[in-house]
Length: 214
Image 1: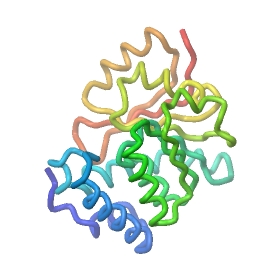
Image 2: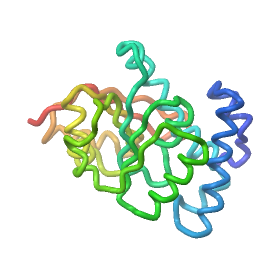
Image 3: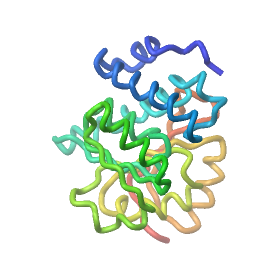
């Protein structure tokens, strides 16, 4: 573990502003406080919060820069299975863009809403299953994200309504990505690229640009 990884190291590695870093500190402090009342993240990962969760989430943002330039406007994000807010809350804090946080746990949604209010985020929390949002969101979605949400074949099913409509997927995956891709191609035709994670030798980020059923 990289428990010596500090917020200042995060600042250096990401280039965020001091103001953004302070908002992330507020988020981190609230996570620690709420963790004592509910299981938001694995307790053993808290000492490594800034590397294991903050940087792990923030690294995906560089993979959406070309999408932002191509659209010529701020992006709209959809985060599936937001949990404690990784990567959705980190995305909202750093980019200032609209992020839809989808989480079925009412307790976790209360935490997400509390953080969004505390740091004045342009984020919307949806206490529903992702299937309930199809056709409901009032604006097009540009990027769909997920972290530790579901195996890839299931994740593609959940994200399909938006990926088939022109959104791209940025999915934080682990050591079994190749196996999951092999399984997924039995049901899906997809155009994808994977990128090595900055935070784990076994982690990768999968970018899905096109998706259709076989």
